[in-house]
Length: 109
Image 1 (cartoon, rainbow, N blue to C red):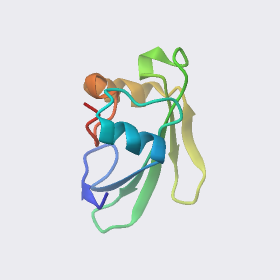
Image 2 (tube, rainbow, N blue to C red):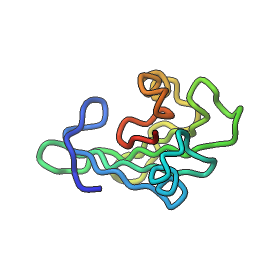
Image 3 (cartoon, helix red, strand yellow):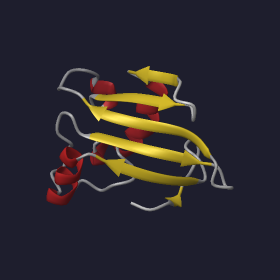
C-alpha cells in the first residue's frame, strides 16, 4: 500500500505492510485476522521523515481479549522499543473499529 493520510497518534503520512497471512484474510474478507497475521505501519511526519514504526501481531484467542488478541508494539525510528505487548492505549483507540478486528486501515469484512 502506498502512503495515505494519517491521523494522530500515528502521524500525517502512513504506509501499511502486511504479511501473507494477513493479506490472504483481507482478500478473503475473512471477518477476522488469523493467528500470526502481522500488520506494520510506517508513521511519517508531514515532511516525510519517519517518526515511528508500529505493528500488530494477532495472537491466539485469549491472549488479550480487550485488545482483540493483538500484540502491539511501537518502535522509535532507531529501532528502540517504545511500548510493546498488551498496550491499553492502543487497544482502547482501536476498539473504535472492533467490527474490523481492531484494524482501521484495511477492511476485513
